[in-house]
Image (cartoon, rainbow, N blue to C red; front, side, top):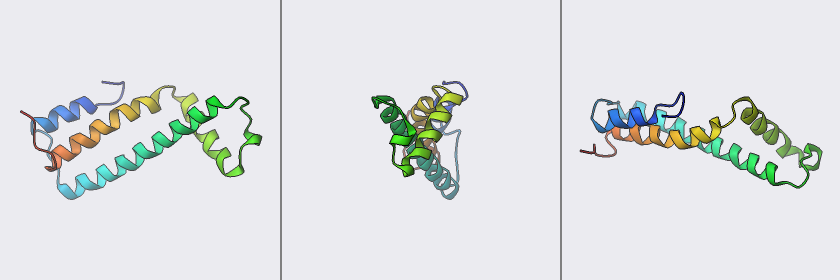
Length: 108
């Protein structure tokens, strides 16, 4: 388990049939987690691109990208490594919720 994340626990509970959700509610949560995962992956891409620039100057970026860089770098500075942890853990939550709503069969 990664810090505050419990992806493995949710997968275990869903696999054992002890996590069961209403399909409509599960679908809403899954959609939200998928949006969150996409946003986190986008922030990580921004950080990687920023780190690979020979000269890291906000003024050299197009105005529409500046705030994305500031947001991504700021989040990473506040909680180093948490974006990477979330990218590893959120897919586990998504899979667990799919199992819990009956989209995937339980594993014996």
